[in-house]
Structures are given as structure tokens and as C-alpha cells.
Length: 424
Image (cartoon, rainbow, N blue to C red; front, side):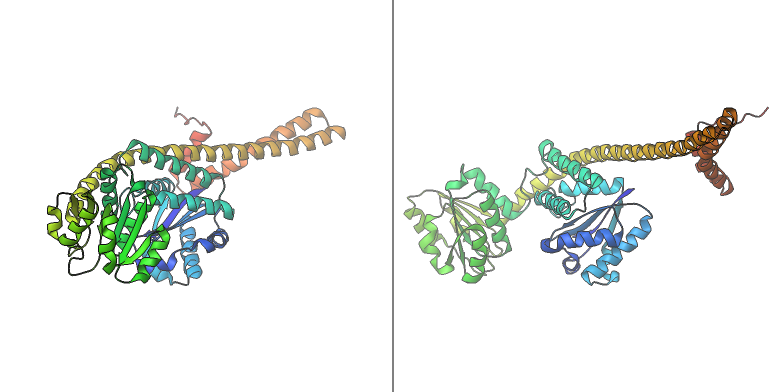
């Protein structure tokens, strides 16, 4: 029995390939059940995100054959040529597979080092495999141990303590300035990817109110639905900026959208209550002179980048500690797995011996009832049982000797505690 992890991610494949072999949540149950049959594995789970698709398998038999079946199944399931898929795949087996899964869950293999979202996605993969009936003892235990490792890494290291994206850094700064974001009112200018991420971070932090200003309302309204925000046009900003405690802007405008005069009027309206402003745009959306106003805390994307650079270095140091935890936990899981395999082997071997003994005893009893002499019956029973028990080990030793497999022969001698014959 072996564990296999196979997949593609942001390091091995462009998005054009990744999107072709992703698995939608609605079809994942049928995909798992189909994979169990097609790949001939005992257990399976699928992790599918925007940056990676990974298959986790428990299988028996030849690893090469399993790899061929996996590629063939992916080709057929997604209708994508194997020549497109195979070069992008990475493979991990047994201890390396376990180590890889744990590193993924801890964010050590992510595009953004230490990002926490992947753990939730791993938990979803676990739940879906359980629901599909494609998970049993080994995979269940592996996922549970993986979740425990991720929790330990989050608790004992600073891998996720510092902001490493401009959106997250902007919200983190706001949290430092405002003791309670639940009472804060936010004006977001723009509706692109960066502002969308800012909005999600604010929403996750239960910010009081969000207003989105954009040149066109369609895109802004689509984003606003996800976070319960109000929507206005850029022309309406002067009417609303005075109500905002936090202003974060990121547009593609070539000219500043928020000028010094507009912000001065907003401060007068607010009776000089401070405004926290973050300009994530290049070129800048907020005039440089706005930073000269006493009641404005203005940060640019460069200010955040210096914070992020320090935080990335902090995460890298924490990652070294996290790798040590993962290595230790990988070793513990593999010890458990070896124990499981040993237990299964011992149980199977003992059952085989007992079954053979019982068959021979039954025959011996029948012979005694027929009047055969007890000494002859006992001698025959002992001879047959000895031959039965010797057959498989003897055949293995002869095969190893004939094939020149010295290591295997030494291993067999050690198993059966055979002392080397001494020369006279």
C-alpha cells in the first residue's frame, strides 16, 4: 500500500492549463467515484483551487501503472490531451506525498507564503471525499493529521501573522489605527481585482459600512453584492467622502481622482475627525498634497511595499520553523502507517497458519475415528503442517538465490533467525 499525491500548480502550469483540469464542486462527487474505478485506487480525494489541482490516492500495486492510469483518466475526464497535462504534473509518493500535503495545508507551497485560505480549501476537499465515499482509514487519518499540523504551525510560528499583499496590508494598517472596524465607514474607489480583495478583507473583519465608487456601476454592483456595499459613481464622491473614516483607492485613472481641495472640504464637514487614506494606484489616485493635511493619514503603495517586504522576510523565517514541524509530523504519520501495515501483515500471516492447522487437524481427527493408529496420525499431521509452513519461505529463498538477490536472501535469513553456517 502506498500514498500518492499528483497535481499541477502555479509553479508548473499557466492558468490556461490549470483551468482546463480544475474540478467544479458540483461535479466533484461523481469525479471521485469515477476516479476510484478508473485509476484502481483504494481511497481518493481531490483538491481544486484557482492555483492548483491535486489528487491524493491510496493505492496498491505498481506505481508506474498508477501514473499511467491517472494521466489517462485526466485526459478522458477533462477532454484535454495527455501531451498537455503530463509535462505539468508533479508526483510525490509515500513520505514525500505526506510531507507535500502538510506543506500545502500550512501555506508553505502557496503563491503567497503562509496564506490561510488553502487550509479551508483542504478541509472542503476532505468533506467532499467523505461525502463521496472515496475516503477510508488511511486518507481520513492523513487529512486529520494534516489539519493538526496546520493548526500547530499557525499557533507556534508567525507564518500568517504579517500582511504580504497590498490589499491585506491596507486593511491591517486600518485595524491598527481604528480600535474597532465594526464602527468604521469605508469608501472604496475603483472596482478592480485589488479593491475587490480589499473589500473581502474588510468584510471578513466585520467593517461597519462599505461604499464603492466606480466609473461604471455594473462592475461595482457585482462586487458590492458579495460584501453588502452601497454603490456610487466617481462624480458622487464629493458628496460622500466626508462620511468616510477610511478611503482606499485603486483605479486605472491617469489623473488624480481625489484632490487636496475635495479632502479639505470633507475634513471641514467631519469637524476635522481624521481620515485614513490608502492610495494603491500607479499613477496615484490621491494628490500628493493631501498628505500635507494635518488630519489625514495618507499611505501610498510604496509605503505598503516596504511593510510587505519586512513581513515577507518575517514569514520566511517562520517558514523554516514550520518546515521543521511538518518534517516531524510527517515522520510520526509514516510510523503509524508502517505500524498499520505491520499489523495487517501479522494478522494475515497468523490467520493463514491457523487456517492450515485447522484443516490438517480436521483430517487427523477423521483418521483417528476411522481407527488409524494415533502415532501415525500425529506423525503425518506434523509432517504436513511443517511442509505447509515451510513452503512459502523456502520458495522465496530459492527464488532469491537463483536470481542472485543477495539483499533479499539476507533479509529472509534475518526474518527467520537463521544463523550463518560456520566453516569447520
